[in-house]
Length: 285
Ligand SMILES: [Zn+2]
Image (cartoon, rainbow, N blue to C red):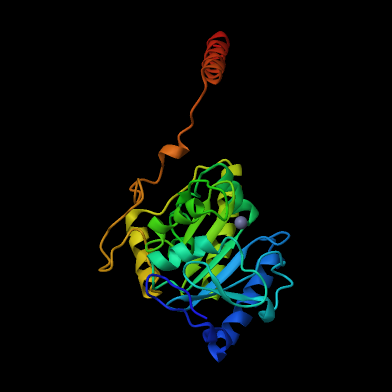
């Protein structure tokens, strides 16, 4: 069997190689982690690995990531045509395929719905970065992709512009997608992103103010990131500053988002409270 990607043929026999068997096990183990960490409900979430130039092993549709076994997995070409496996491939594979097409160095992708990161995706707000070393080193600034119906070509294409310089994205009103050199690493990034979103939320609930790394501190973290060979939106291949995100690296320990915005009613209430206490202090003199 073969399928076309331009002139590119696919090789279904790759699905049965020792490498494929190891990858299938790794995908199933990652699936169990996602379910145990409550990042996927029902049959939600999907995992993929690009094993050849036009061959991608992926999870099937309608099976819980907890129950999945190597025999359930599928293989598709870069157009999404199924070329091996008895179960039907996930309909969200197109999102993964856009990453693999845009960034050939990427081998694996994990999509899931972890609650705190997904909550950020509902309000279309990426977590603030530059507050915790592990997040800077392993994930960094995360784009929020515009909402499109899951499984459609329009949805899949939203990720392509970020595939090369990021390794995670929030999918508006949906969940997250993370990618990397191995399935295990892509799953790690989902863990780091979810825990980070949760932690930032708690810090905010403590009332702040939030404290951010200085540019000098950020440089130190970027050095570590480079040593791990994790691509970053802030650096080009030579390690020079090259940011594709609005705002870029921050040069202040207080951000615009930390400034309190008051409604007119709140402002009036505040003015009244201040003048009341001033009058009280004068009367008590
Ligand atoms: Zn989903």
